[in-house]
Image (cartoon, rainbow, N blue to C red; front, side):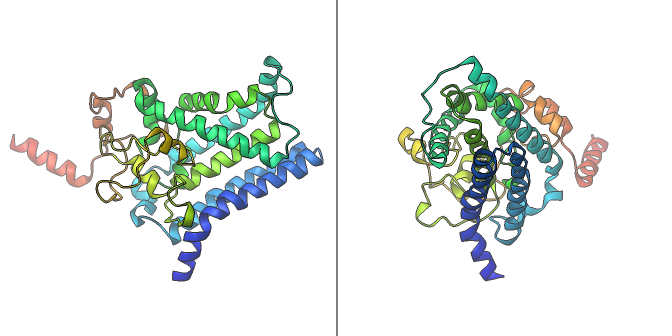
Length: 322
């Protein structure tokens, strides 16, 4: 078991980021682009399912915190599954809109279509990584955006299933800021599809409850402990490490932090103003309309907070005494 744990720690991130992305790239470049089989895009769905299943298995073998694997205790699996479906469906709709956007902005000769496809994907990811990082940074600075982004930060644990938790409105803004410039200058659909797959896998890895070892890349990728630091519920101390994957943008912006003031525990995730963050999908979609940053927890969530039988019994005793 110890040997398997080490294999997972060192092999998880490379398998997800390089192995599965390489498989997705082969499907798109060989089956779709080279052979003209558009239906082959459907092969990305089982690859995405493998990504989620791999994260689920790896979390059991080499977790950061065993407590984060107690799915029934957290009661968030149903909502997170709904978020996954909404996120991936929205991403697919975004790809379908690319031909329309290209028709509206018929620029020619700007995108380097003569480059090998892998270099186009790499360039697109670097641009998207920077754009998403800046959007992420702004989402922590401006209250209207933070109210939407709070849906992602309210979770009490990090694991593969909650990497793509987004309020649909915030996801649309993310897509416009991160992908629209690329599409306007001519990013082809196949490149956009591989980019979308890579971003999904990156989010899964970034939030996985896997004690991944990154070797010489430690400190250069916003994975694991670095992203835990971003999700802590210590007031504004989590306003750091905004990168989607690379930490270089945070280092340039002065928002990189790899040394928390104290040890991060399994209880330190979430938003300090929202200790009773709703577990239901619909309630999470409604949260931005009730939550006002800086004004404490809305009464709605205090009332919705589930009480244990012991808490209810104690309340009855207190009320009887009064």
